[in-house]
Image 1 (cartoon, rainbow, N blue to C red):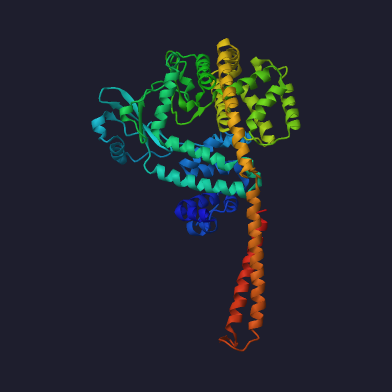
Image 2: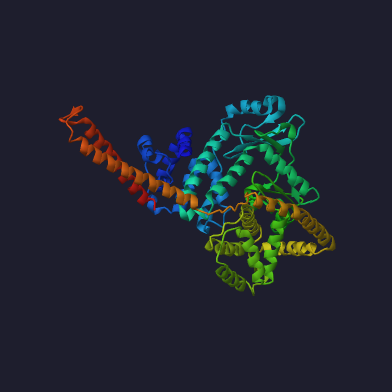
Length: 560
C-alpha cells in the first residue's frame, strides 16, 4: 500500500494523463480495475475528457493500440515489444501492435545547437562543415540528421530527445506498479508473468536510451560480417559518440520501403532476398546475436549487391544451448519425431506444470499435419503461428529471447516475400540446420563437449564429500531446513489479512454500539441535544465503520 501511495504522489501528473487517455479510448473500466490511484475517478472532471466516438463499436485491440500511440515513447515501445510476444497474444492483437508508429514531430530546430553543445562539448559549427537541421528520421527516443564532418565524411547524427530519460523512468515506475497489481489481483494474467515482462522491457528501454549501447551493438555486427561481401554495417565515430548522441557512417542506397526502385538501380529483388535471408540466419544460428527488427525501414539495398542494416537499438541474443534447441526442434519436425519435438517445447516451459498427455497429443496432430508437406512448400511463418497457437492453448510463456527470435523470422519471411513472391525461408534455413547438425557430431566438437562434461563431472565428484560432510554437520546441529515455495500463497495471505481487518472492524463496531447504548442511559457528563455526548460520538464512529465495511465488501465483490 505504501509503495502504491509513493507511486501515486511522485507520478500523479503522469497518472492523470494516462487515466485521461484510457477514458478517452473507452478503457476507463480497465484503468479502474488496475487501481490507478484516484486518477480514473477524477480525470474526467479535472480534464473534461470525453470518450472516443463509438468506443463500443471499435475493437478492443484497435483502442489499445490508439491509446499506446497517444501515451508516447514508452508505451509505443511497450507495444512494439508486445508485438514480439506471439506466444501470448492472438494474431489480431499482434497485427495491431505491429501498426504502432514511432514517428513523432521533430525537435525544434532552435534547440539543436544547444543539445549538440551539451552532448558533444562543442558547437556544431566546430564539429561539422555542414549539419542539416531537418531530420531524415524522427522517432520517439531520438532523431537522425545528415551531416558532414570537417574531414569531408558524410555521417548520420542520431540525437536523443531532451527530457526523454525522465519521462521514460516515470512511465517505467508506473508500469512496474500496474504489473504488480495485474499479477496479484488478476488470476488470468498471472500465467503471462506481467512483472517479468515489464522487467525485461525496462532493461530493453534502459539500453535503448543509451545510444552508446547501440554503437557497441553495431561494432559487434560489423565484426561478425567483416568477411561477408554482401552485408554492410555502418561504422561508428566514437570520438563523437556517447549516451546522448551516436555519430555513424551515412548509408546511401534504396530503402527497404521503396522496392519499386530496385530494377532501375540494376538490383535483382530475388537476389537481395537471398542475401538478406542468409545474413539474418547467420546472425541467429551461427553468431547468436541478431537484429530483432529486420523490417523494411531498417534495411537499405546497395549496389554490389549489398544489404545494409541500420537501427541496432533492438537486438536479440541466443546462447549456444538455445541454438542447439532450435536445431533440435527443426530436425524433429523434419523427421516427424514427436517425442524429440515435445522434449524441446517442454524445456521451454521452464518450471510451469502442464498436462503432458494432452500436450503430446496436440504435438502429434501438428506433426501429422506437416507429415507429407515437402520442405520446399513449408512456410516458416505459418509453422510458427501454429506452434504459438499450441503454446497459447497450454498457457506456456516462452523465454523472451525465443519470442523475439520467432518475431524476427516472421518479419524476415514477410520482407522476403515482398522482394520475391516465390521466396521460402525454409529453403535458406535447411542448409544452416543441416550444417549445424553435422558440426555437432564433428570429432572436434565431440571432444570439446566431452572435455567440458568430464570437467563438470570431476568437479561435482570432488565437491561431493565436502557437501555431504556439511549436510551431516548441519543436521547434527539442528540447522537443517527445508524451504517450500507455495505459489500464490502471498495472494491468499492478502485476502486473509483483508478478512481479518474486516472482522476486527466489525467487532470494534459492535462494541461501540453496545458501549454507546450503555452510555446513553447515564445522566452524567457533557450532553448534546439533550443526549450524552460520548454516546452520540460512539454511535457516529460506529456508523462510519459500518459504511466502510459495506463499501469494502461491495468493492471486493466487484473485483472477483
